[in-house]
Length: 200
Image 1 (spheres, helix red, strand yellow):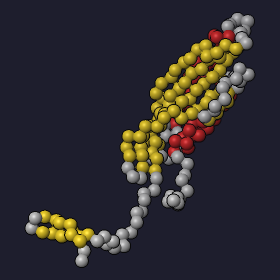
Image 2 (image 1 turned 60 degrees about the vertical axis):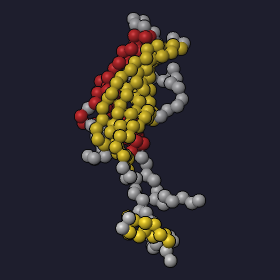
Image 3 (image 1 turned 45 degrees about the vertical axis):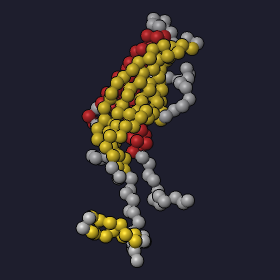
């Protein structure tokens, strides 16, 4: 058996959008860091598998969660693609505040910035041309406090569930030309209806 798809399969839209979400968050968060004089270092990753390390400051991981297709044809599929934007941070005890309080303040601030960026009408199509993306929405935010306390580091995380309506396309199969009648059976019309008979 040989391969029958002869064209190069392009990157899928769900991959392209995941990368774009990461780029947008990095650009906008670094801009807010500058505008608001935020001291925390912010790093953005795509589908990171290694666990958050206590030596890191703010770590954001953008990953795909699921895709649900509702409209399907032979040449395209439309549906909702869900992405998880996980935000991790930690802090030490300080003279006037506890580590958990410092972590909560940072986590809430960064989570709020990410939610605002992803909800902004300026990014409703994530910068793509009209028609590529059918809209975006922040579905929910979950907080998990006391994610893990290690050596006086208080680690917490939040998860923003972000959905984009995407369209995936594929080329239609051109089919095989029918060159002639290769069967020994034909269809005859009789007064009782169509009847299969052998060719003579």
